[in-house]
Length: 335
Image 1 (cartoon, rainbow, N blue to C red):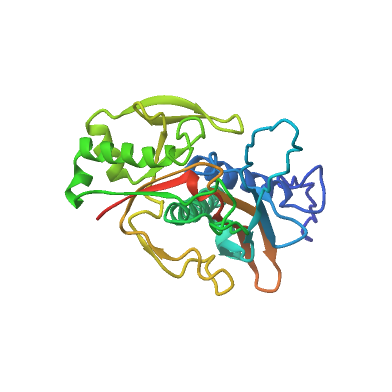
Image 2: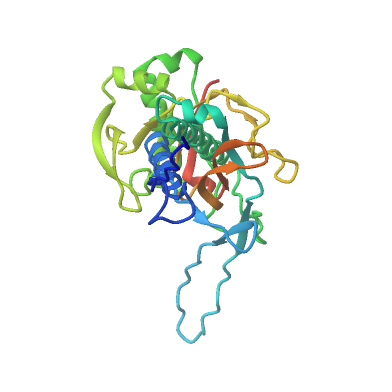
């Protein structure tokens, strides 16, 4: 007796409206997992705007020197005064990728949502990478003793542009003393104020390691506050009393570390993202201190490769960051 030829009208849950791509909706689900995880895990993404870099690899910021006042003398036509101009540029030239590859058989045998778990891991890893990249740019800016902009003025920079501020602890033991640590931060902020930077009004944030954060909190130097970023995002942050600067802590920031072989470092950018930051305890910076951009925003893909007979799960992006207005950055350093 011949076997009955049974044909089933199957449902493809990953197909959009019965389309040919049976994984299209799975890709959307995976994208949401990665993006959501990145947004939750990244500490600096809500604070630093990322401009879109299209039609070229390099993006620039222009600097305008301050104007000069003069008095009007009766009978004399006032002459014009000169403003200097300068430019600072950053280049996006590297793509970073998180990729997971699954053999064909194991995909059918999996007992939990592999895409969800992988998406969370990809999002977390990329969030850590972005935080490290942005913190490196902020720290390097905070260590500059001169403005990044060079003009034609006698001082070598547009008038009104200055270097960053640095405050050095009197001893390494002061890093463990909440009162001395807090006082040192105050001296650092005073140096910024003397360069016409208001740490509170200019939306500065203070990056610290968990160790520095808990040292400050021991002396009740922190208060909880809902902070509104420049793009209108509401964030819960801790604020140093009297200074009004939100404190952001993370183990993924570059302070206290010696970084080499960074994925974004190359000969073209002078290995910009490498550096010895082991003596940096805390770094304050605002959006004006650094410039950040991306040519490829966070992009994800889930696809089957017929040649290798494997499933691929990707998440990738291409971005860059660099120094902009140095006077809007400052660091507290170990001796």
